[in-house]
Length: 118
Image (cartoon, rainbow, N blue to C red; front, side):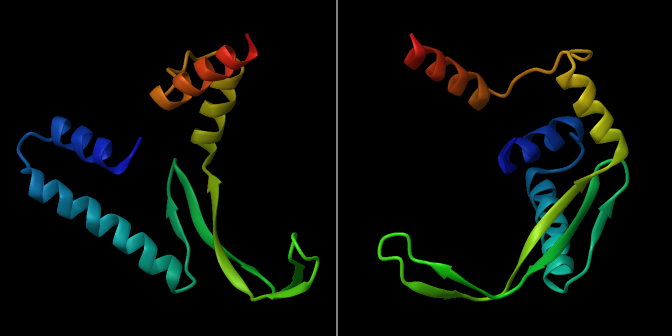
């Protein structure tokens, strides 16, 4: 699901809200999540999961073409830990207990992979 699909789904389920209001709500939500993570905080959505940041220390890497040592600066990356309900649902779907509908992108990539194999 991409952002526009989320906005369309919210608009369908909330016809009393205008498209501009829904856009503003989605913008505010994502902005609040990014602001909290940028400040080094954590965002927990019960039943869904928790977003946090992890620090990756500075290190010396290698240029794959020349083999020369290259300094890689320290950075923070976003980490997501799924909540219990989501984790259980994903495990059940993987086990075939719940028939999960594939996304259109996944279906097309599977079809193209099968075509290459043939």
